[in-house]
Image 1: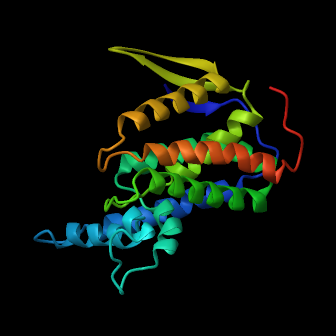
Image 2 (image 1 turned 180 degrees about the vertical axis):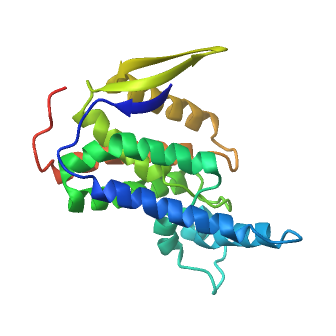
Length: 232
């Protein structure tokens, strides 16, 4: 299932959501610009950028050394949230952020939402690091923080209708499905894939998604909505 849009209007301009999307796009364009080079120099520069500013779990845990000329491992918890590995990587994350983030921001308010988003990303990074503390593979992407947004939306608007692309083999349909089903199915996929990835190196940071989603639900309850959630 691939969400396309929801049916919830917003009562205020989602300035933080738009700003986060813009910042992610700008950083990605910079990453793409690094790849412009000859004899593989561009690709090497892009890889070095990811290694420097991506979150490397073993650096955070001290299981592998950190060079003196690279950013602090703690700083990379935040910088890694704005790096992406491909066009489809950033497109998927930003689509989810736009569909679900604007309503969560509308509920929490701008200031609380940015704190919520970053805290969800930190929780996601911590969960993935605990799952693979010795991994030398950099973790990048907004998906951990975006997963927190999904967790909050799951609690706030479980009965909102989400226009969703559903694919069965060679057949596909676009249908309206309750957010409870869409996001519940999404979370189930993350858990099953996360359990299947235990002991494997690299790939998708499934536990970051799981940790971010759970953190998003907890942070929502902690921060408390600025306005009562709408009944949908």
